Length: 222
Image (tube, rainbow, N blue to C red; front, side):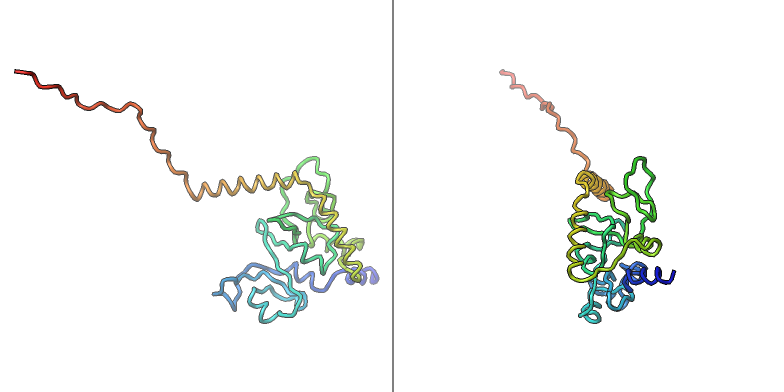
C-alpha cells in the first residue's frame, strides 16, 4: 500500500491539486481599478491563489505561469500551455474559439442519452471520442484510485512523444460534432440578440391606389 501511494504521488505534480481547487475570475484586490483585473492566472512555482495580469508582471515575472479561460462558466486551459508541464493523455479535449482546450474539473452531468459509446471512467460523463477522462480532475482521481495513469513527463523525449500522441488522438474529434456545436452556439447568439434588440416593426405597405384629387371643371361660357 505504501509503495502504491508513493508511486501515485510521484505521478502527480505538487501544484496540480492546488490548481484544481483554485477559484478564478474574481476581481484582484490590488488592481481592482485596472482594465485587466480578473484573476485568471496560476503560478506553477508558487501554486497559491489566482492572480491578475499586473500581479504576474510584478510578483511572478520569472515563474512558470498558465492562463485559465472559461467556456460556459467552466474553467478550461489551452492544450498548448498545459501539455508542456503535464501528461494530458487520456483526457478529452475540445476546440473552442479556434483553440484546443480541456476542462480542469468535472462538470454537471447532462441528460443521459442512449447509445453513448464513450464515457469518463470516473464520473460517467459522455465523451466525444475514445478518451478515458473528461477533465484533469477526473484523471487525478483515476491516478490515485487505479494507478494506471500518470501526469509525469520524463525527459524531453517523453515530452515530444506525449505531445505528438496527444495531438494525433485529439485530431480524431468529429468535425460533424463541432459543426453542430457551432450551429447551436450561432442559434443561441441569434436568440440573445433578439432578446436585447427587439425587431424593428415593418413599415406599412404603400397604397398603390392613390386618392384622386377634387376634379376642377372648366367655367361655363356666358
